[in-house]
Image 1 (tube, rainbow, N blue to C red):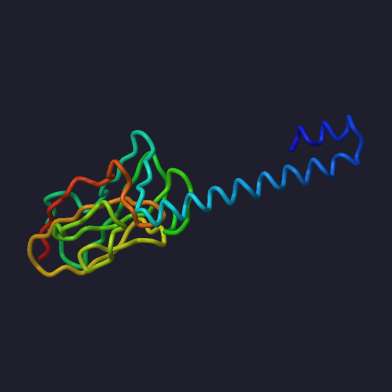
Image 2 (cartoon, rainbow, N blue to C red; image 1 turned 90 degrees about the vertical axis):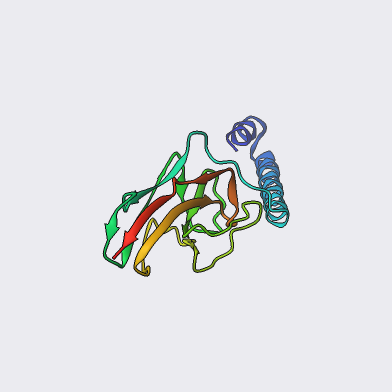
Length: 163
C-alpha cells in the first residue's frame, strides 16, 4: 500500500484510486486462497506443524500426587499460544485432556468423550471429578480444527491417586 501511495503522488491522484483498487483486489484474492487452503486442510485432516521447540505439560497436580477430589488440573504450554477452537492463527491451538489412557487416533480430529475432554474455549485449567483410585492424565495440544499437530504435542503422562 505504501508503494501505491508513493506512485500515486508521482503520477497524480487519479492513478491512486486505480492502484488502491488493485491492492484491495490482491488482498481479496489472498484471503480467498487462505480460506480455500483452510477448507482443504480441514477436509483432508492435514495436520498443522507446531512451532519449533514448543511443548505442553501439566503444571499440577504433580506426578504421583495423592489428592482429595475434585481434581484441579492446570495446563502448561511453551513456544506457542492458546486460542479458541476454530480460530486459525499460526502457532496457536487449544488443549485436550486425556483421562485414563484412552485410545486416540492422531490422524483425525480428536473426538470429545468422557476420557478425552476438549477445551475449545482456550481454557488453561479445569476441575474434574474422578472416582477414588489411581488415574492417568495427559494433555494433547491441537490446532484450530481439533487436529493434533504433527509432530504430536503431548505432555508426559502423569499418575495420580484420588482419595
